[in-house]
Length: 205
Image (cartoon, rainbow, N blue to C red; front, side, top):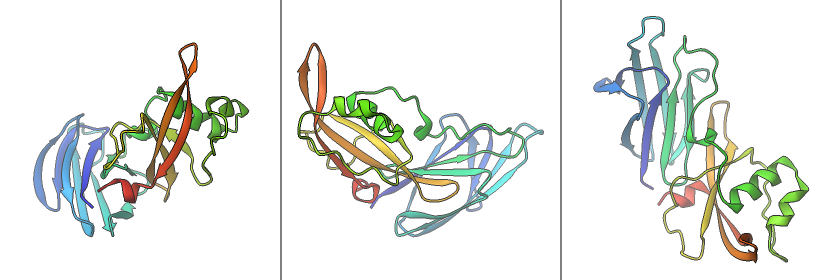
C-alpha cells in the first residue's frame, strides 16, 4: 500500500521532518511518501511570533495512523487514495475547527446528498434510491464528505463517488469510499441504482 502524507498548517512557517529542514510551510502544504511502518516527527516554526512552535509525532503501523500527538494541535484524515492528510494547528491560532478536506462543502451529486440525509436520519433519503436498491449499513460513520479522487481500481460502472468518515481517535479519522451507479429517473433527475462501500485500506492500492 503506497502512502503519502500531505502536511498542512493553519500558520505559515518553516517545516522540519525527522530533523531535516523541509523549507517553508505554505497554504498548499507539503507532501512526503511514507512506508506502512513509520515514525514521523514534525516541527513547525511559525513566522508569527504570537503563534507557538509545534512538535508533533505521527506513528504509522500497518498503513494506519496508530498515534498522533499532540491531540489538541494535530489532526489526521486517512483518505481512500492513500493520502494521510495531516493538519497542524499551533497554539495561538484560536479554536477554529480543522480545515481538512473532510470538512469541505457538502456540494455534490445524488450519492453525497443521499449519504448526508441518511446520516441525519432524514426519511427523504429513500427518495434518492431506485426501487429495490439495498441501502448499506452506515453505523459507525459520522459524516458524508466529498471524495476528490477516485480510489484505485474504481470500475467504470460507478459514475458517482463520495466519502464516509469514521473517527478512529480523538484527532484521527478514516474516510471510506462510497461508490454508486446511477440511473435516469425523468425530468433530469437521477437515482442510485447500486451502492458499494470500499474501506480505505482496500482503496489505497
